[in-house]
Length: 113
Image (tube, rainbow, N blue to C red; front, side, top):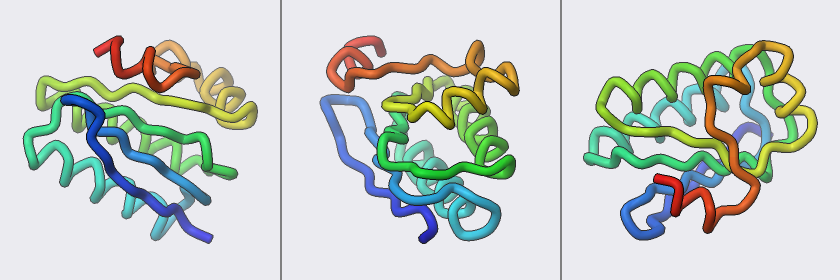
């Protein structure tokens, strides 16, 4: 199953809920498209909820970095929510844990913007 992405608004924060697999192909392209649509619509506060993502490969990690760059270049912020152990470990290994602001609580994450 590739990634299933849904967007919702919590105040002025766009929360993108991802479920499934973020892998080379459809999973990464749908993430890229969803982020670009949000930024194109003027959303500058983006919270990416990865709580239901069960697998992410190297191209998925690359797409997270690309999404971060896209949002940041538009003067916005991208933060991550509900990382599972595997994704946490991947971000630690790739030293990206220092790049992304990661939260475990949605309400606290929304307040942090």
